[in-house]
Structures are given as C-alpha cells and as structure tokens.
Length: 67
Image (cartoon, rainbow, N blue to C red):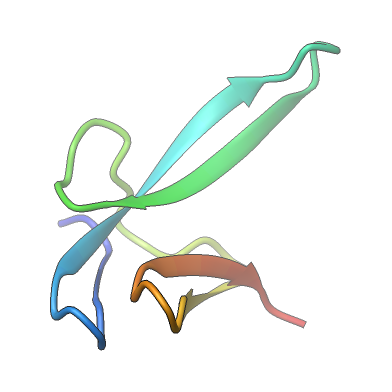
C-alpha cells in the first residue's frame, strides 16, 4: 500500500512517489512527489529525515526535511 496523505483543505488523497533523476552534470538525485493516483514509483513509507507539510493556499502536500 502506497503512503498517502489526505489534504485538510480539499479532502483529496495524495500518494507519495519517488523517481531517480540524472542531472546535466551526471549527478544522480532522488525526487519525491505527491500524485492524485498511485502509479509506478509509489512508495510505502515516508523517507527517513522527512516530514509531510501542506501548502496553505493550494492544499497540496509537500515533503520537508526535518531539522
């Protein structure tokens, strides 16, 4: 089951995904994003060192690194 978050503003459910991206210099990074449907790349748990926050204006979830 993919990690999901329900928006407080809109009530919609969003699923956490991850993707590996290669930058122009050849450096590899891991991108995390939320989508309305669980598709390929959906992950089951929140990554270590991150917390879920919500954009107050749009109600979209986002990840922030914990301090």
